[in-house]
Image 1: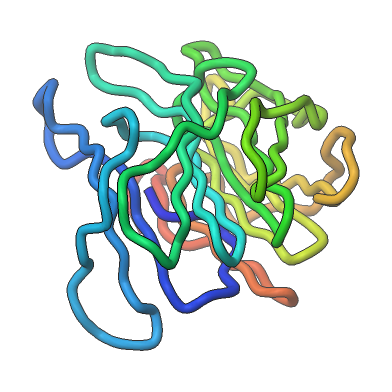
Image 2: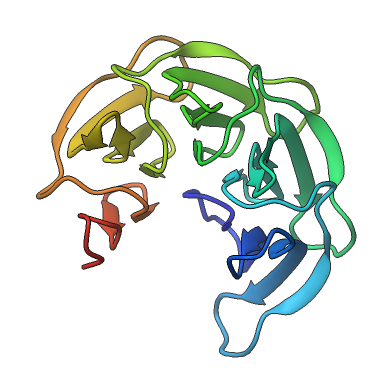
Length: 218
């Protein structure tokens, strides 16, 4: 899983993931790339727990992963973190309020927000952390419905949750929050089509959502 939707530095980091159908095909590996150059990813260390379906976010200096699952299944509330410009294994940051897999993650320079996930029932909760410190995630508010596998992106002030899975189907709904406050989401608009597992990224001005399952993969 990538480091989420806030990028203000030179390095990109990936942590965890899933590479096959076997019970042991999840990963704890952390790798990095230098965004301004071309080349393969370089090993940087390991997460504290091997898993996939974790939510990810970052500040300019720290990357943080939360939640996730392995095929057993075991669902985690673990939050891990690394300092982006160094290498080494992740350290324990704290815990989510509820174990969940495929939550969303978005952030600005100081605050990170995790959205929803399945535990295994779909969650509507939003929780936040202060990225520069350590500690358990705190209640932020709620989304309109429980969902997971949604796309996220953010500017320095606003975070958007787009699409995802709301039982019994995919959704095209987009919702937003103001990152520096707390409270429930507000309506943002709709994606062009309902989808889950899409990727999201954003700048201070524009957010993008790409790919996903509709149920085919566009």
